[in-house]
Length: 299
Image 1 (cartoon, helix red, strand yellow):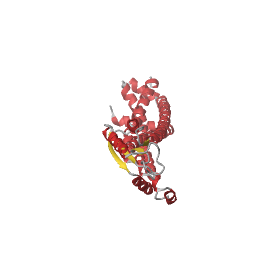
Image 2 (tube, rainbow, N blue to C red):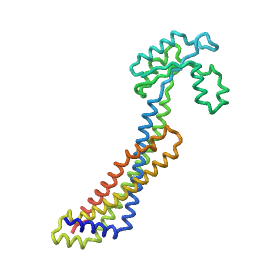
Image 3 (tube, one colour):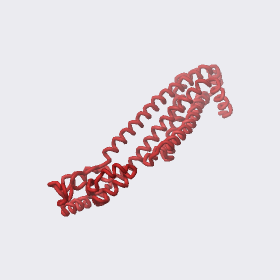
C-alpha cells in the first residue's frame, strides 16, 4: 500500500466534507467530555465514600448516671458502663472503642461550634451524655453494634452517621448516571453523524473508487482513507475532550471549598477517566466509519 496516497486521500476527504467533519468533531468532543465527567464523578464518589466511611464512628450514647439530677429509671451504673464496653470490645467487627465522658463531649462540642458562641453559651455542660465512640473494621456493619448493645441496660441510643451519608452518595450516583445517559445519547448521535459523513464521502468519490477497483485495488486499500477520516475526527475530538476535562477538573478544584470533596477535582479521577475517553472516541469513530463503508462503498 502506498502510504502517501492514502494520507493524501484522507486530506482530500477532510477538505471536501469540512462542515460535516467539524460537526462530527464537535459532537464527539461534547459527548466524550460528558462521558469523562461522569467517570470523574464516579471516581470521586468511590474515593469520597471510602474516605468518609472509614472515618465514621458509631456513637453509643449512655443514660445519665444513677444519683445525678433527672436520672431516668434506666440510669447508668458503673457495672453497666463496664459491661457495655466489654461487649463492644469483644465484637470481632469492632476496630477500636473509645470512652468519652460528659465533660469530654462538652469540650468537643465547644471546639466544633467555636464559631457559634451563642449556641455554646446556651448549652449547659451537662447537656451532652457520656458515650463510647466505636470504629468498625467494616463501616457498613453498623447493625452489629445496634443489635449487641442497643437495648443493653444504661444505653440511651446508638447513632450512625453513615445513614445520612448514603443519601448524599445516592444523589451523587444519580448525577453520575444522568451525565452518563446524556453521554450515551450524544455518542449515538455522533455515530449517526459519522455514518452520514462517510456515506456522503463515499458517494462523492464513487468514481475514483470505481476506477481503483477496476485496476485491481483491494477493498482494504479502497476503504482505508475513509476509515482514517473517521478515525482522525475521533482523535481530534478525543484530544479536545481531554483539554475540556482538564478545564472541568480545574473548575471543580477551584470551586470546592471543603477538603472532604477534593476527590472530585483530583488528578487521580482525571487521569482515571482519560483512557476510557480516548479509547471510546477513537474506536467508536473507526467502527462507525467501517460499518458505513460496508453498506455504501459498493461498486
